[in-house]
Image (cartoon, rainbow, N blue to C red; front, top):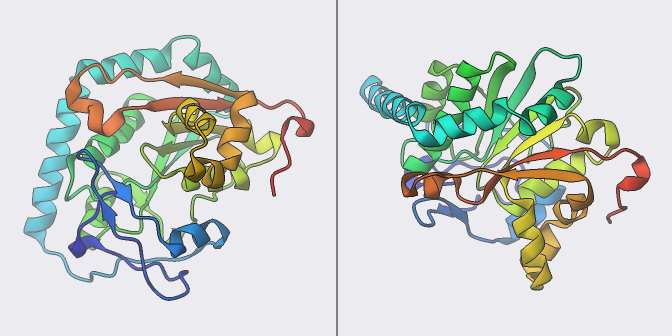
Length: 278
């Protein structure tokens, strides 16, 4: 997530009211590791609201113009046309159809989008989600959450047709129905929370995840990366029943926003396919 002091929010679930400051990495976002970050995995959903209470029409208009420019540029790019074609053709389209099953629509949930007002990579990521919603009739609607969202960003998101959550789920939404989780460049613990909350055959089969490559996490674990080994236990355990398709960023312009991103589809058959994880 990308943040600035002006868009810093407070998570009401933390024990001392602190939140983690998020800094950009290569134009994107990176979270400092704190005690609260380690404890977050055990936290329950809780109410959330931006801590800044003021905005103004000119600020909202400026951000809306940035978003419209970004959506138009991305929509006409070879990157987007390549990605859209891949979603519409086998084998990726087959996995989408399997998850949809007899349902006609799929819910999209965006976690960790970052500050769309401050940084371009989050704007590009949000633009991709919006373009997919416009072009694929089977996407129902888009829900968005990031604890650093400002009032201005929330209002622009709603003007773009998204719903901003008032609950911090800590990534623990259960896929009771077909659900696409759109989470590019989130931290490993957030993917882990999501999988942990859905660690049942019927729930995992309802999930589509767009986010960091699980294969990359597996490679990192082989080099004894302690952070991955500790925070991504469910991610690593899911490798045996995950079908992953890496996306092609096509050009350097989209690298910061989408590098190392993949589609992930989960297809465990029996509960015994799911390792027990403490």
